Image 1 (cartoon, rainbow, N blue to C red):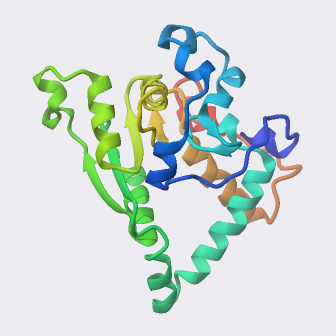
Image 2: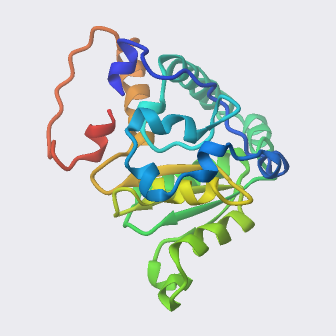
Image 3: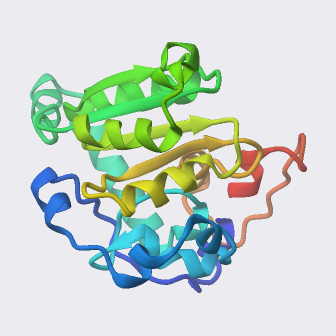
Amino acid sequence: MFEAYKRNKYLPVKSSFNTDPEKQAQQPLGAKQADSSWEAFSSLTTSQKQEFFTKDNRLFDVLSAAQFTREFLDENYILTNKIRIIAKTREGKKWLSNLLSNTKAMLYFSQPSTRTFLSFATACQTLGISYFDVRDPNTSSEMKGETFEDTIRTFSSYFDLIIMRHHQQHFAEKAVWVLNNSRRSIPLINAGSSSYEHPTQALLDIFTLRKSFKQVDGLRIMMVGDLRRGRTIHSL
């Protein structure tokens, strides 16, 4: 994702999400989306899949750091700083808590997580989002034989947003494929998938770099650790 700061080569999309349940239900699926099988879709390249993760030229699902343009990263930095300032006062916190008070989120974390789970839970509370969580797959109906597809469709009936962490590499991507080919598609945010991707951590890393050094252009960064299996490094 750091390369997006040096050259904006990705398909530009607007950064706002559509979490309005009525608008989500009204949005028709394109023929390309509805007619493709999971096998055909999974064989596409990352750039070929990008259109599937947007609606009306707006970012809808967040699965990969490759979706973030320079414009998006700049807007995210400005917006995050504004929220941080507003949240410092009691009146500001109250105002923020009403922004998405009609939104419900499912935090589906089948892989152990402390910092990422708490960061999303805190973000939900800050913006007034009611959230529920499944953190132990053994408590899910999947243990009784319910299919993964049925579980995801059930989530979409109750919630307006899914935030997912899973140990399988393409689990979140398949969940998006199921949702976007269903009667009620809702946004999904990948909060970490196997050793493959961690796009929201990359957002935080870019924000921290810019906050610390005032800019990111021209920086030389050394990455240390498990470079092969480190999903945060892959995303950044």
